[in-house]
Length: 55
Image 1 (cartoon, helix red, strand yellow):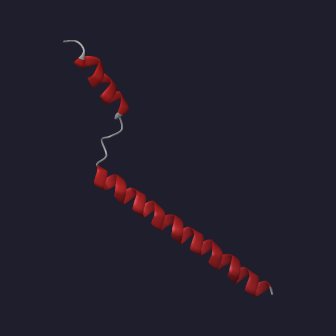
Image 2 (spheres, one colour; image 1 turned 90 degrees about the vertical axis):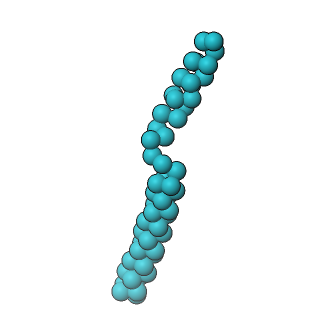
């Protein structure tokens, strides 16, 4: 009878940050990957441009 109460508390504690939807979470991961890719491409481009101007 009181057995289901601790399970619900565990579940709510385990998924305390689940207020963000699954779709929004996946979209955030995709945008983070796009941001990282653009950052890395920009760094490579600037290093190459700097190397060309120095050479």
